[in-house]
Length: 247
Ligand SMILES: Cc1cc2nc3c(=O)[nH]c(=O)nc-3n(C[C@H](O)[C@H](O)[C@H](O)COP(=O)(O)OP(=O)(O)OC[C@H]3O[C@@H](n4cnc5c(N)ncnc54)[C@H](O)[C@@H]3O)c2cc1C
Image 1: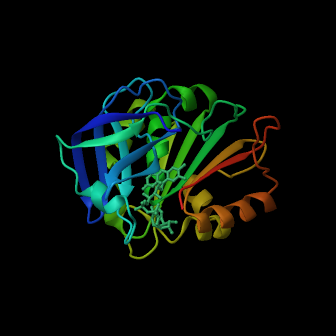
Image 2: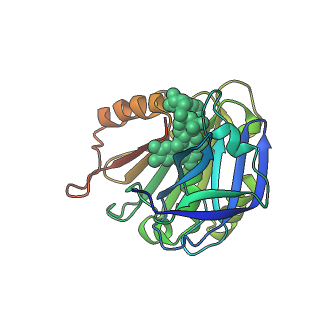
Image 3: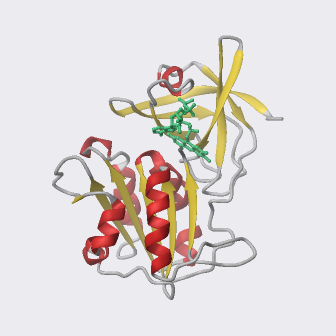
């Protein structure tokens, strides 16, 4: 059973066609960075809910999600039509284990995201956790078009707050973009271009890798990482990479 609470939309941002952030006034503060809530609307008499990572840090308001419209998706089309003042249902309790809670400290934390998978890392980056556990944090955001590179001001602020410790890499796969590497994250891993660009190597002795986004990226990245000796992290058996699959 979901513990639904009614929440009011207090902010909306459209980054580019079909790519949105929504902010809610809701009593959800007690969560671990990296967790998600469910967001629901009553559509034709039925409550349609889907999980969304929290973008805000624990204790910060407003509650925020980052999502893209999915053609024929039952929820995202009506969700993107909401405006400040409208109401939605949210689960009051956040869930999920894609957090840094059980991860062993290492030198480098690599956060690899495709599309809206960026959102979960914003919450983690805004929390004290990565800065307590890792010396260097490398965020890699893979998108199809340069216009999909959302939250750049937020990422600039984080870079300014942690000089020399935070590196952010954009990878754009379907067009050439001035500030980005060209290609998919997995291809840039295979070619070595990503690590050459950052001047760091993903290695089980020094790295923890988080993977968030679509199933193809996660499946291919797992193969690449395991070939290099990284093993999946589990609560009871610490390893080197963790995953959160959105679709
Ligand atoms: C733990 C978890 C956290 C998630 N967090 C986020 C988040 O922060 N932001 C976000 O945008 N989505 C997130 N998702 C996906 C989200 O829950 C919905 O599936 C998505 O927003 C589409 O909802 P829908 O009802 O319109 O379509 P659905 O009925 O959910 O899906 C319709 C079809 O679209 C595919 N699909 C789902 N999401 C996408 C996508 N983003 N792009 C392309 N195809 C997709 C599904 O695999 C399915 O085939 C998360 C999923 C999980 C499991």
